[in-house]
Length: 231
Ligand SMILES: *Cc1c(COP(=O)(O)O)cnc(C)c1O
Picture 1 (tube, rainbow, N blue to C red):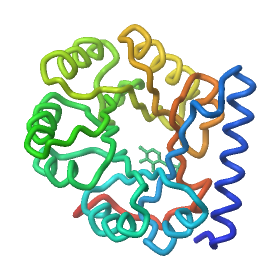
Picture 2 (tube, helix red, strand yellow; picture 1 turned 60 degrees about the vertical axis):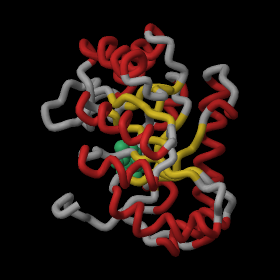
Picture 3 (tube, protein in one colour; picture 1 turned 30 degrees about the vertical axis):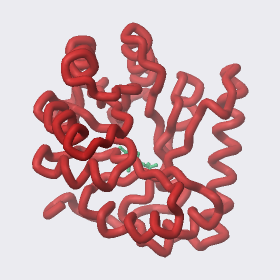
Picture 4 (cartoon, helix red, strand yellow; picture 1 turned 120 degrees about the vertical axis):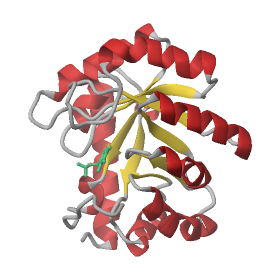
């Protein structure tokens, strides 16, 4: 696990890398948000990033976010937490309570549940549609060929506040092709935001137009191996 000074150094290094990648691509670094992925890391570790001044975080499980974030947000009210993992429809209510941004809208049943819950809670967190750019059977997300229709349904029929698209490229492929594809789908649908890029490829993602990158390991160090069972 990274120490406090390591976390603050890592945040600085990642921010500088984003800045260089943005400048190389002729973009403003201010147009790229760093989402610090704090999943599996205990509150003490996350607090070190907060103390270093960071405010935007990503978590992939509802239960874990509920366990960690209410106390942290009481101390740092301007902290924001993005949901970056799959969401079961029966946890929609809890997700809308604890998360500020939902990055993983990946099926119509979930989109409907979110629309209903936003009304009930009078809360409208920004939503991203997750696209399965690699068309991987085991991965969540809308297939690229179905993206336009799904985006239209979410925006025009369900009135979800869709701000952009998110993807997780296949581990064994050149991520640039997937980033370019995500960007193209966003462009033709008039969506401004692209959540793409992780510790291994965020500079490439920034070159391809990422407006937010989701970086865990490069900030907090490696995660203990955990299974998804019982999540
Ligand atoms: C865990 C995770 C990340 C961060 O991955 P690192 O390689 O540790 O930077 C980014 N996006 C999603 C969807 C994740 O689940």
